[in-house]
Length: 173
Image 1 (cartoon, rainbow, N blue to C red):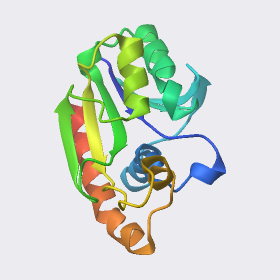
Image 2 (cartoon, helix red, strand yellow):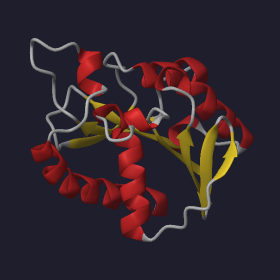
Image 3 (cartoon, rainbow, N blue to C red):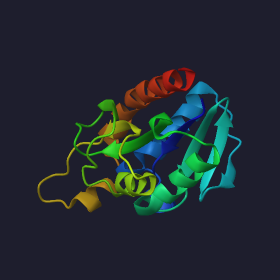
Image 4 (cartoon, one colour):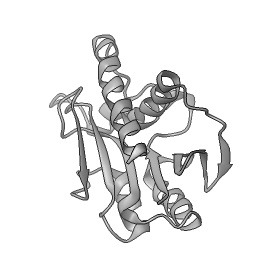
């Protein structure tokens, strides 16, 4: 059964190390630490690479329309919604925590909202990467589009190791 792992992020150098790009950061860490070939190709409004029966997908659209990319890839490879894993930032989880779940609310995440809209369901797997809540005086958009603090960047490494392990396990099931 083919699987699709979607890593959410925004294109552009200004977004590279932001909280909202936690999905792309996790993908880069996975490739680097697990020595997975990253022979990326362009299709589905995305960069993608195949690893056995798993397709890794980095939509190159902005977050708010990433569902278009996910839908195109899932349709092309005939992947069932339950076999899609979306890796994304989540302000509802404390920084450094992760959670894997099937379906659930969108929590104001426009990337997830786009995927749900394009797939017609929320019944896809999610690997939520906790980035914590913004301070009360800060807008959510400014927070998620902001960079991790130096302390968070140091702590992020162990979270990324855990995420990589979870993804490798998911790929092998």
